[in-house]
Length: 131
Image (cartoon, rainbow, N blue to C red; front, side, top):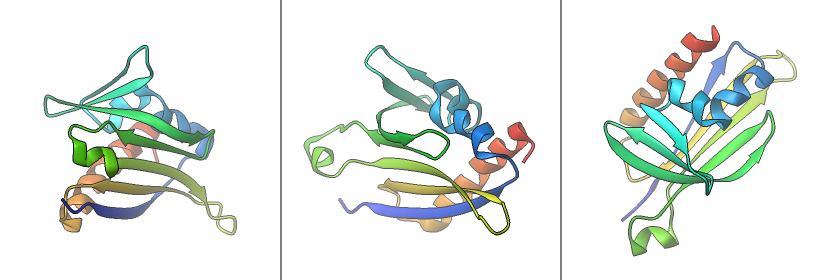
C-alpha cells in the first residue's frame, strides 16, 4: 500500500507556550483533534475517532515546539512503514505570527479531503484558544 504525506500550515493567534499543551497532552488533544484521547501506563496514546481506537506512541517532542505520534502497526506491512502525525509550532520571527505545521503520513491519498479535515480540526483548536 502506498502512503501519502500530507503537509499543511495554519496561522493561529496564540503563543507557542499556550498551544503546546493542546498538542502534547491527551486532555489537550481530546478537546480538538479526536473524539477522545487517553494514555495508558505504557505511555501509549489511544485516539478515538468515530468509535474506532487508533493507538500511537509519542516518538519525539520538544517543549513548546513539536510532537510526533507514530501509530502502532496493525499488520506486518505497517511495521516497515508506520503511519504518523507530526504537529509543529513555528513562529515567523519577522511578523511574530505563530503557525501550526501538520505532517500527516497515512493511507488517504486525497489531499483535498485531508485539507478539509485538518482545516476543520484547526478551526476547533482556534475556537478553544481564541486564536
